[in-house]
Length: 287
Image 1 (cartoon, helix red, strand yellow):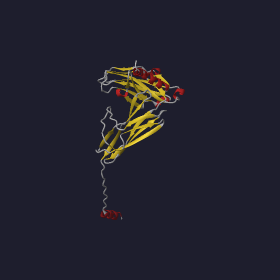
Image 2 (cartoon, helix red, strand yellow):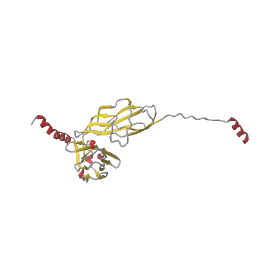
Image 3 (cartoon, helix red, strand yellow):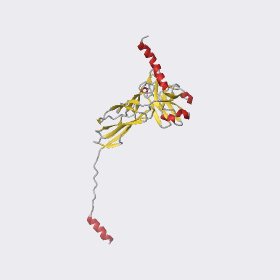
Image 4 (cartoon, rainbow, N blue to C red):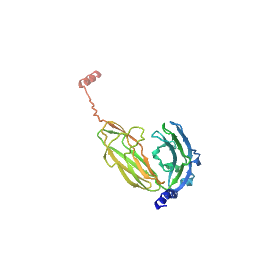
């Protein structure tokens, strides 16, 4: 066996060893009552709910919470087939097939800071579109706390501007984890899964991307300006954050969408008309 063949065989094991060194605690979802979800009915949604509660000493471990979802897309098509995760009935994450890193198995990782709180309610759903045959969320899925970066990305913009003005766009990247991370930020990401059409525009000031290191407990902000040329309501593109996660996978996090209205500025004329004769007549009649 050649040296390169040996390394190819050993490399997955090496990644597992390095990942395990950074694990504080890790549990399969089956410990909290989760059972496999197999959806065979096109156009339907099948869900399971569970409550994750760590012991106090486990929740105090150094690191960040991560939910690892193992799913299998069988004869998948480019339809509305996805896995959704609702966290504490507040935060919903949508995982399309392209959000999974697939080798022998397909995995998606979700940063879960809520895991270090008292309880975390999870609702995991298998949503099967009209063309795919089957979507399975496996019992191999698990949660854990790891010594790693924990990243999030958010886009902000003004709600209203007037035609001819520039709009300041901001990309905010936050690391709430315990390690630094090398990241690449793409300010305008072509989100092909957007539920509504994305209105295009040009960046007039600033760059369209950035590479940086974001330290633990740090936040970085990137600004750029756009200048829309039409009076319209704009569905602005999301931004994307690219990085290598704790499991050695290339991961992408997509930001929120912002809406912005561009108005046509119009002058408002107010005329005040006073009739001096009418005023004198009114005063005379009261005397």
